[in-house]
Image (cartoon, rainbow, N blue to C red; front, side, top):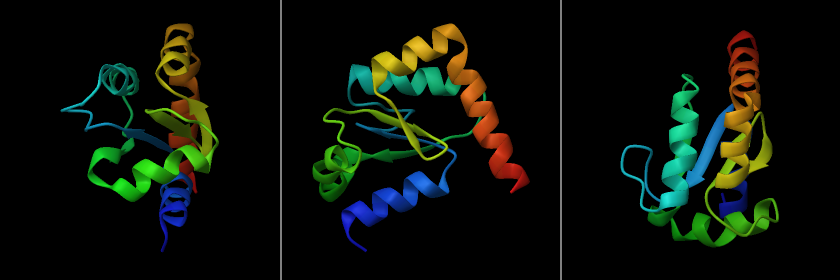
Length: 109
């Protein structure tokens, strides 16, 4: 499987996933840290990919959804954006709602 197929597989098989620098517990950049914190505060499980440990993912992810920066947050198979958009959605309550819906849909499927 090439990198774009692995990215697509991860996005489609996880209701919530963040592609980030580092891990939620040990982020390697401030933007990834803030986005992961917002996801954790939503109280639902989410998947993550540390792009620093997979050079193919690191180089191909910007092409996948035509989004040039990290982190990238996907909910229910759709790119919602990076750090700023994730934080805006969290502050408005949209993020919690979207995550809850995606996770509950996956559980009933």
